[in-house]
Amino acid sequence: MSTAATWDPSQYLRHSDHRARPFTDLLARVPTLPARTAPRIADLGCGPGTVTRLLAERWPAAHITGYDNSPQMLAEAERFAGPTREGGRLDFAAADAADWTPAPGTYDLILSNATLQWVPGHPGSFPVWVDALTPGGTLAFQVPGNFDAPSHVLMRELAESPRWRDRLGGRLRHADAVLTPGAYLERLAGLGCDVDAWETTYQHLLTGDDPVLDWVKGTGLRPVLTALAGDADATGRFLAEYGELLREAYPATEHGTVFPFRRVFAVARKDGGARC
Image (cartoon, rainbow, N blue to C red; front, side, top):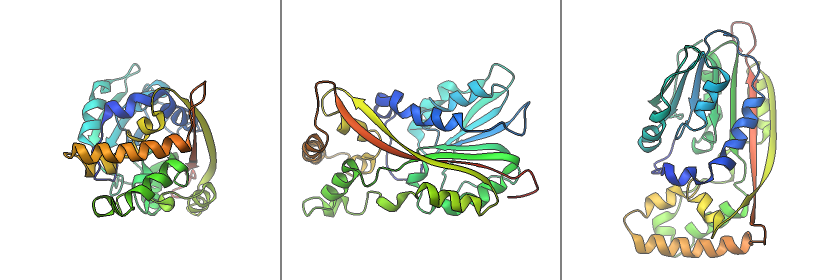
């Protein structure tokens, strides 16, 4: 959410099955919410809403709001807005995770899926978000942990190379964009929460021509594509160079291209007392 990049929902959704799996794995670890009849839920960085609607399937009586700072993503998400099957409601609103400050005691669940890596210093928001939870409520999130993977290292190295530095230098996230599971656990436990933190490396089998390039065009490469927007020649040259590097790093096999993707998860349940 917190980025100047322009988002393309159709490109993002090209790998929607693979992208949804970490969300469902995160959701499976969220405990029972304190408001059992009509919970209040926030989804920070809802994107096109395709996984936000899964919250309504699990909590059909809840009032769920998906927040995002991309007009393109919010426009796509609006198709899922409306009443849910047990009297709840799903809606969407413009907000940025970098400065989202809900009122204390407002939410039973604050969830974020693959968004906080875009927000520098996001652990600094944890105290405010925990305060916004009702007693026994949960803060749950997952972030990519693959910033030292070839896909991201090669992207940064190319963007910082002499031929691209003037236009792309400093635009991409670095290895410190997210914390380790242990560091997240320590931060959240320090707020008095009961924390479950872990990591998983998914082995995605991608098909088609240049499938890893196609994947990152929907996410990590957005700042580059935004910076080069309007210059088709430069965009084509960068993608050609980067695509060649990716083909060497992730060679195709007879079954497809294996794309390892590490993700970091945390589920923090607020103490049942007045405050974590």
